[in-house]
Image 1 (tube, helix red, strand yellow):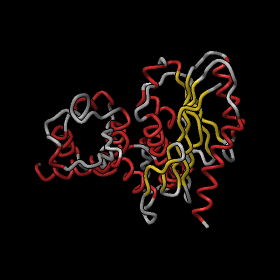
Image 2 (cartoon, chains in turn cyan, red):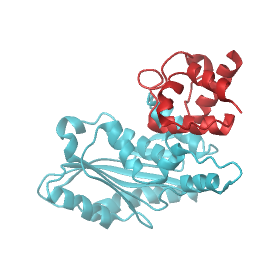
Image 3 (cartoon, helix red, strand yellow):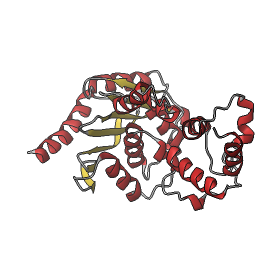
Image 4 (cartoon, rainbow over the protein chains, first blue to last red):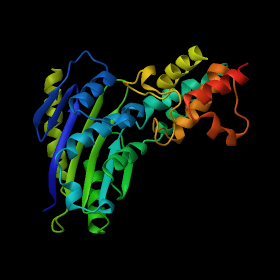
Length: 214
Length: 84
C-alpha cells in the first residue's frame, strides 16, 4: 500500500505533526512574525529564507518540519523525489505588492526580488534547492484543497515510475489566513494512493481548526 | 567617503533583506558576490535599482557592473564620482 510516511499541518498559529501539536505561537503576531518565530525555533541557518515571499516561507518551513530527521534522501535518489502542491491564491500577496510599485509612475522602481516571487512554482523550486530534490515538481492553483487532484497526479507519477517519493499537499496564504498541509508519501508499487486517506487526514486537521475558532 | 560607505551598507542590508546583519558585519573591501556576502544575480539587479533609486545613477554599460559591484567600497567610489 502507498505509504503516507508523515504529515504536517500549520495554520492559525499552531503546528501539528502527525496530529501531535509541536508548536503554538502567540495569536497576536502577524504572519511574518509567526513564521520568523518558527524559523528561530527550528534553529535554522539559511539566509536565503529572509529573501523569500510569505508563500515560499510558509512552504519552506512546512518542508523543513516534514523532512526533519527524515531518511528521504538516503532511501530515494534525488531525481526520484517529486513535489506536488496546490494552493488557492497563487502569489496574490506578492502580486499586489509588485503591482503597487508598477503603479507608481513618479518613483518607478519595480523590485526584481519581488518580481521573481510572483510565480507560485518558485515555492517548489525553493524546496527543491534546499533539499536537493530533482524529480518532477508542480504547483497547481485550485479553489480549495483538492485531494482527488493530488492523489491522481501523484499516483500517475508513481505509476509511470517517474518518482518513488513525493512531498504533496496544500500551501495557501492570503491577506486573512495561511494554511500549510504537507505530506510525505512513498510508493510501494502495490496499491494506488487513496484519495480518501488524504481527505480523512485533512478533515481531521480542519475540524480541529474549526473547533479553535468556535 | 566613510559616511557614504556606512549609509550604503545600511541600504544594502535593507534592499537585500540581509536579516540579522548590521553594517559593521560587512567589510567594505570584501567581495559582495562569490565568497563574500554570497549574493546572487537577483541581488545584483536589486543593487542596480538601489543605485538608480537612491543616487540617480544609471549604469549604461552592463560590463561595468563587475567592477562597480565588487565591494561596498567600489560602489561608494562609483557613487561619489557619478552622483547627480
